[in-house]
Length: 98
Image (cartoon, rainbow, N blue to C red):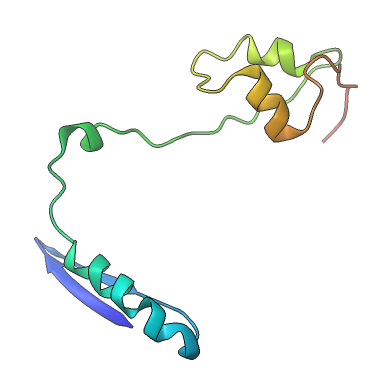
């Protein structure tokens, strides 16, 4: 399913993709998404900033714990960071070359 919506000076293209056999299960979701298109006016949502990543080259002897302690904008705990990366937070990394 494809649709085009003209809004302001722009035309937006939307595509709903699924297998032919599953289309009947998803056509309602596709149509509801298209019907919900409107100008965003919720101030809380308008102020959301995108997440950014910063690539950091570790130095010999640094650990996840030492790096997490320097992050000014960290929104997750050291334990969550350790779990997500499957890294012991106290393990020191050897100096590696890129």
